[in-house]
Length: 292
Image (cartoon, rainbow, N blue to C red):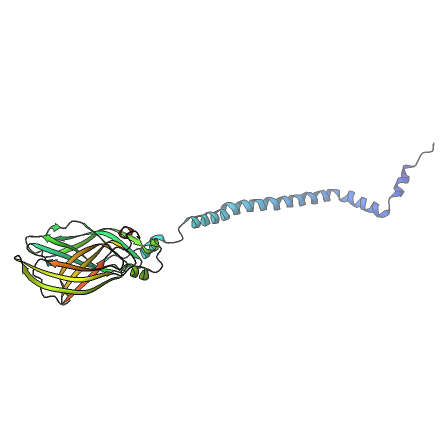
């Protein structure tokens, strides 16, 4: 069997291939170094990016995140300032008087103003005079209302030189809580009491005691029946109040008209004007009688 000459395999490579093979063999070490350098370069890039990411997270992004979290959890609205701006204003005490009311008796009268358009209040009040004080009496005042408060026939051996009016235990209520869109119209429907035929009769002596009286006609022109409606009667001499009294009409029905008489059992100075004002807490559901 004839043998093949090994040198004949060399004839199977072209000259170009031999040159490439020669170049590869002669540059093999260099190529290895270049590959290692490239891999090291890639490692440096990836490691560098990873280290940058860690540094950025812990030293930059984490600080920003904590700051953002702090801002989110903090109060963006200045609630103390908001509450201070929207809380009700205090009452204004316009006057405080002491009026004679018979032997060793005196009437205490104060005039106050609620300057708030959207708040009404319930409270307790008393008068302090000459080291003494009256019992606590409950009162109320409607939004933007100017009204009188009083304590009648207080016993005192001598006329009090000065009386101080004091309000305490105030409970404020917003109109928002009552869901009243138009308070002016709502209140007018419930406070529509017509006062007519007001007449003051000067003092006359009866059974040894002087008696003065005021008569008037009160008409309930609202659509509501009330268990009771108060009226306070003020006597004026010029611009000054010279006498005060109060009466309550019970079960005052819608459309009803009543003739009312109120008496003073003492000599009343000259009266130039009489004022009759209703007093009813229209926010108190207990004052309304059930519809028949």
